[in-house]
Length: 458
Image (tube, rainbow, N blue to C red; front, side, top):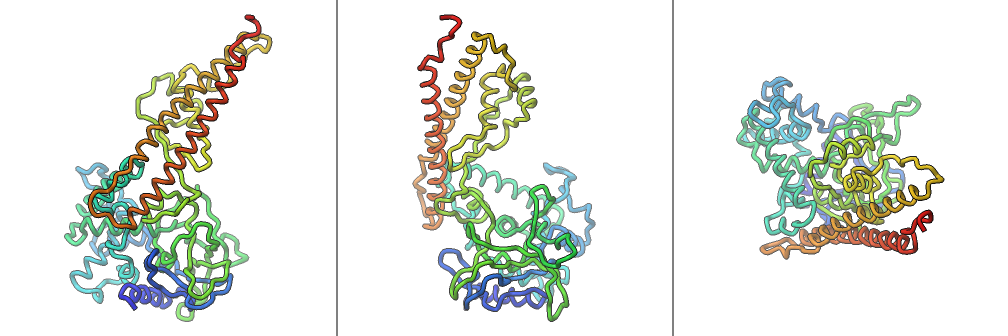
């Protein structure tokens, strides 16, 4: 058994000792494609619990903040950005709190060994099982030649922005804690763990109904939630469409009585030797690569994000956009079906024609001249909007197709991931352009067939 596999095995034993549960047939194994993963060492029947993590083993921002204050003799209101920083007086965010909490485990272990860790730093078996930096494949761990492969994509800029944001957080955190061992490399590692392994805290609640102590989790997007780490649960890799059930329950435990847990339950049976998967939900390759370090071939959930230029709009345009409840600064998404976001089209109509009516003007149905003029103007504006959008996409496609050869040493797995990501982006933009060209041809055909002539003037 490898050292990394043994560490995960120790983690699973620790989870059970803390009142959790691991199916007897679930074992950690190294997979050449997915790394250290969960496998079935024997057949597993459907509706079996694969793992249960006690609520009190979750690494939450609240737990992290309390531990930091206890260890460093600080008060909660001292976990803030100090004067002179860009966000002076602002509270540390969840990533900074959990990053500092994990980092203090390493600092104390460096100084005194893991046996001397205080009770407030209780997650060493979990932290010690997490993959080291060389095993991570998110773009913040790319070499410069590997980053060059992303030039011309949205992801290249997103990587630079994320790195700058995280570095600023690290500096602000260390300005308070003043620990040499809390290095940038370690903060990058903890932030990457959070981006690739975190779950929403809304999973950590029992069902509201009192008739049952076990229930499939039902959540809403509006519900307030924070990122949390669930030891052991994050061992299961993502598979799109994989049937899996999350259950919150009071789980019987031989050593801890009844324990509140979050469990993964498989609705399907698994054969011996099969890898066991979780399902993170529909995610595009851009999000998967940036946050998790992998992509899916021909991902049906892929998108291309479009942002309009930042040119300041006139007062009239701003007023019309506000009236129509349109935000020109948002990210508009193109999907694989090539359909254009109606909001994007509406924004462009107003930007290109400030006098374009937000609501259809009322015109006397007997006034053929006015009706025709309105129709003609509307069709011409639609052609202008489609032409503008087509040019935007043409420029984007040109950048996507000008892939850097990646001069210098590039890992094969990184090159493959970037090629899959770029291919998906090209396909989506190309499909959208085909839809635009089709609509332009249709509109031009209608105008050529006599819509340019007004009955009352002939």
